Length: 274
Image (cartoon, rainbow, N blue to C red):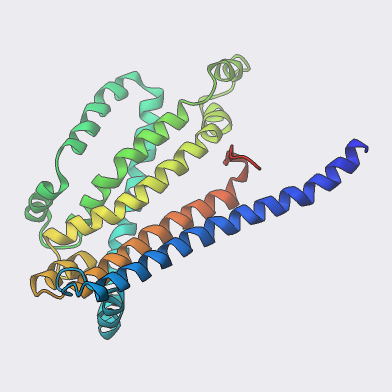
């Protein structure tokens, strides 16, 4: 069999394997989640667990649907806080990563400050931010930013430093400018690292927004969880937590899809059968 014939035969087989793998990546988690929900429902009914402790999924759904308009409003508020904090983390992280990459002085000056911001518990910092900025949305956005930007700076810096040194020396020997070196060498090598950081940052942004809403808010899913548990409306609190989980998954998948569409060459898949 000629090499061209082997290629023609192998291509459909590889496509089928990829389709089957993609199908399994969706169906296996979905089936697992459905099984967990069914077992949860059965255990709640079988052992007669009080709903103020652990409500059954059916009760969570029913109570959440009864106040679906309020749920939607709180979801939109939390989504806005998440996106504002996440976008702010991108705007701040990228210049910091560039400075750390190209300047030893800035690396020594900035890294201790970055570590300092992460060593302070955000729950303890949030009330202070409320005093500084007032009981507005800004403290919640700042908390979200502080939670999200550190892994983003680290991943961006690691990506910008990932370019092979010999390749950097080559372009400099060819008298390329710093801008040409950055956009043609360093940035392409950094793309997988940047998207890894973005995925971590967006999931942490959900956590940061909830922390901010726990401390000072009159809207948002974090506020809804706090007020619901205070009045023992546990099913509503569980519903809010479920929505937060869905938001995190959706945002994560959006970034993953953007990476696959915009930079398919940057995705390395070393699993068998690929």
